[in-house]
Amino acid sequence: MSYERFLADEPVVVTAALTGGIHGKEANPNLPETPEEIGKAAGDVEAAGASVVHVHARTDNGERAFSTERFQAIDEAIRRHADDVIIQPSTGATGAPTEKRHLSLQTDPPPEMASLDMGPLNRYERLTSENTVATIDALYDEMADRGIKPELELFNDGHRNEMYGLLDRRNLADPVYATLIFGPGTLTRPRPRNVLTAIAGLPDGALFNTLGFGRHQLPFATMGILFGGNVRVGLEDNVYYESGELAESNAQLVDRVVRIARELGREVATPAQARAMLGL
Amino acid sequence: MPCPYLDYRESADGKSFDVARPYCGAAERFVQPMRADVCNDRFELDHETDCEIYLDQADEGQS
Image 1 (cartoon, rainbow over the protein chains, first blue to last red):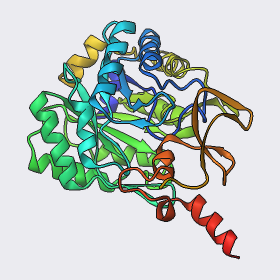
Image 2: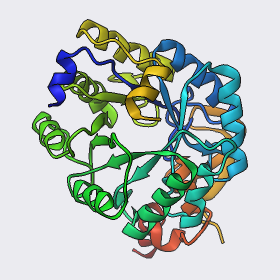
Image 3: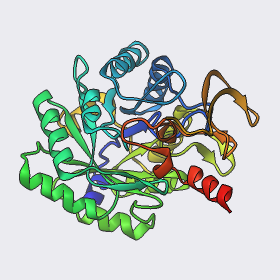
Image 4: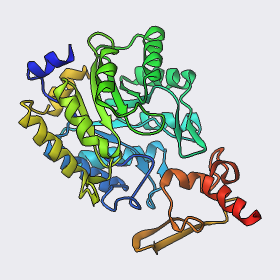
């Protein structure tokens, strides 16, 4: 099913995860943290071919921030620097109270999309991102109330069950948009056969995004392109351009994956095309 | 109360920043933003139970 999208030359939606909530400039000094840096990075990745930017908020010293005001400042900076890119804030917040996870949804105007983690995952040795069913439902309900498209983040195969649970409990608009995530720890083991298994387990008509952490970013993005999916790259998930060489920017990572998509015969989606494909 | 190994520095370990960032004196490196919430005991997080670096250091202090 998904490979038919490759054969049909369906454009690839490229999401750039600009900042993240885990590491910062201590890992790569080119990672954007302030609203102005994030806004400028969004303009640069849009020019390189991304149609969606996934954003987290930080304080001026790089620590995690969750306030609506900070997300509003990021939105406004993105609108100053980018033409039409789709803004997708995170609702993840390991170790933070659930109510803080709603704050990124409350900007004016609301974001067009937002991430929705579909289950628990471990962080370091002693933390867990809980993502209970009740939390997922509450975040989804606020997204639905505000007209926000959820990007369902499946960190492992068990989260596929959780996705079907959400589909049973709630009436999600088509197409369902799921990000298939591969990497260490709690994540799906990054092996090619697991990509095919994950794709085969999606609901009919669903669109998917592939996300590989660290060194897996490039090969799993390439597989996503080949298998008719969409891709997410960026400094949130991988700070290197190649082994031992830090990436110069998010745009550098986007530029490479756009080049690969075109070499494989797929054009990248403009923000307008992405909106049409995702039903925004 | 924040972790006793937490410090805020503008430069260390060959890195420098415009704004002072969280630095772990036990690990001798700048702290990832997510870990900084543990260092600062923010929300329900507690460095005495949630940070393996602190606990390893405490174990070494007892041995």
